[in-house]
Image 1 (cartoon, rainbow, N blue to C red):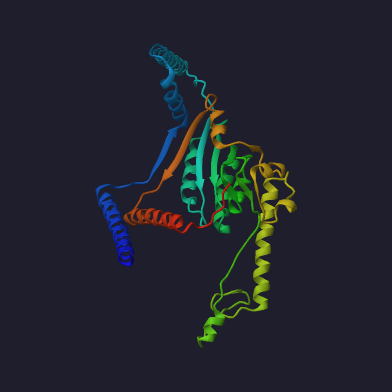
Image 2: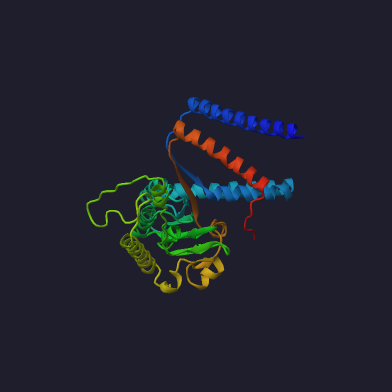
Length: 348
């Protein structure tokens, strides 16, 4: 039995290694065969919604009904083309629907999506006309203050140009994520989306006592009383802790002021405790303006506006592809390990 268990473990490790090597080799081969330049993807969400609807309708329509629907659509497209040509001939602009530019921001600790967001917004601002709007589908648990401050500033560019900005939170916009969301004219959120967490947190591990126990000295020299407050290796002082706490409070005050400026309807002292709330609670606290998913918001405008999804895709280097391959492998192994160990998780 013991030998059988050992053999099973050995085979499992061997399979994992073979899969990893195979995945990396495949990624290298693909990277050599294809070049991935940066590009801006622009696609119509109206066409996507139409395709989704037609996919269902085609299953239930008779052949004559489908033929009649196709004929009616063709007639409608022909009439629109004719109206556009007549308007152009008369030197007039054809009546056009307002446009809604749809952007996505999937945030992490460093707000790495900032690079794509700045290019997407730059593209939209150059193409936008009076009456156009922007919908940002935002997902973020927050992260570094300066990174999310920059992301919020990118969204402010949209407001400064006079475009209406709506932020949709389907899952989470907490801390730095809410710092971004509050810039919008309107915030919509799903009933169980997480919003708020208007607070600041920082932690610094310290191994000074461990080093001291093993007779290891660490020297830290600074010019300026508060060049360093708390350190990982050195001995921390009460004065350093007090200064560190003061800096956290200052950052929190800036956070509160920013939110209060953009959402004056909030009772900032009530919501700036670092707590988070689900959509239904957030609506009562005025952290959000409406309970609605981004899908419903878009679907309600599919007939009255041109919905344009804009996505910037940066070039991928060989190292990027290798990293992505290893990341996917790691996620798969972690998922398997979680199942095997039955790690406790929160469920609804």
